[in-house]
Picture 1 (cartoon, rainbow, N blue to C red):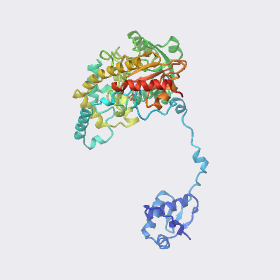
Picture 2 (cartoon, rainbow, N blue to C red):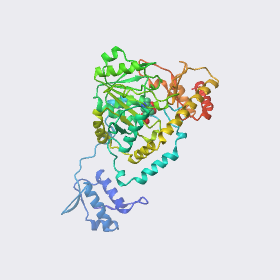
Picture 3 (cartoon, rainbow, N blue to C red):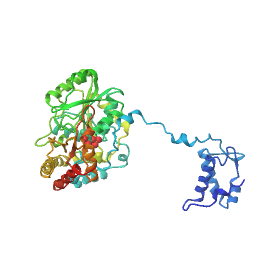
Picture 4 (cartoon, rainbow, N blue to C red):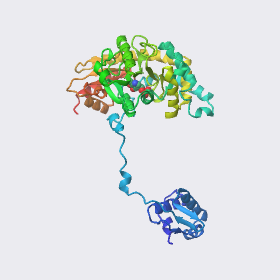
Length: 477
Ligand SMILES: Cc1ncc(COP(=O)(O)O)c(C=O)c1O
């Protein structure tokens, strides 16, 4: 049999002979050039014919026999009888995506970088306490042995859960045990767990309107049916029809600082919501993403812990208080379900970042976290003031600004002649990252404005950034 084509030029540089022989034999078998059942020469005679070492042929034969391309028996080596390769069209015609993927994902790809001025929800990355964080990380790595390189304990590192339970009892007035704290890969991962463990596919999940788009994605991808509930100055404002027609299994709320409107849920509303949820057999998930940065005072009391045995799960994150790329957050759970969440966190996602969790526990215990929050609270007040002043100073039409009682963003309302998606697109071309308010809404609500993050906006650059934003509002498309 003529097989000198197996090593015919071109011979790619850097590919060892044995690999080349293997690749070409394999391609010949899969492509049909060597038909099933074809007997191949003995290794010794193929090696002699090709002028190569016998071991080179043996390597290729053995590798292909292990894969099932060749069969070696006492009569020698032959090409295996493989099912014919599917025609190319069948290979490219992939099955469709799930219906959930089509409906739950946001239309935009999402941003890789959040460092642009006005990107909402980004903390002061330029003021991150690198030195004390690095010291905590170094201590954690020094103490780490090989065990810390495995998956981290389900529910999180005990040291972090204990440090958080203590921190929350001081700053939030929670009476929680470390066993009720489950560390997550950020709020997004926590919401995914809540959606899967607290509700079944097809159940109604209430979301705020306007509300956080990424949360809608998490709940929708878990198979929940979203029902948009209006928000007013006192926060979530469900009607009797909402309760009767789309009774929730899960209600997602941002009571301390509604995202993005900034409304604070009144005490009366909180009590009504807990009562309504109890009557409907629903869970409330409290997304407390940035209440640490309330202007002019400490964080308002959380919904969690307001009433004994309330069906509330509290979700906290380090994305705003430290940095988003850390991907660490936590759920505070009623004791009755904490064990299940721990098991699910372990079984569904294989938790990790044990060393970072240990470092974070150290960072909290040494007081660096509280000190950083204190500094950032002042910093964000200054940044918001600088942004408001720049908006007032820079020439252009006067636009309403709302929100800002806490957190890292304001809402700038636009007239109908300036569609927010278009302004945001032009702003992006000018190196700015505001988000269109319309992306936060679901029908029937329609809003036109920009969510302006100021967390990562250096005060000294506020005027220049606002001047660019004004240009985005006037520049031709
Ligand atoms: C309303 C809201 N919740 C939660 C988060 C934090 O999510 P994660 O912890 O997944 O970064 C954000 C971040 O932008 C947010 O805006």
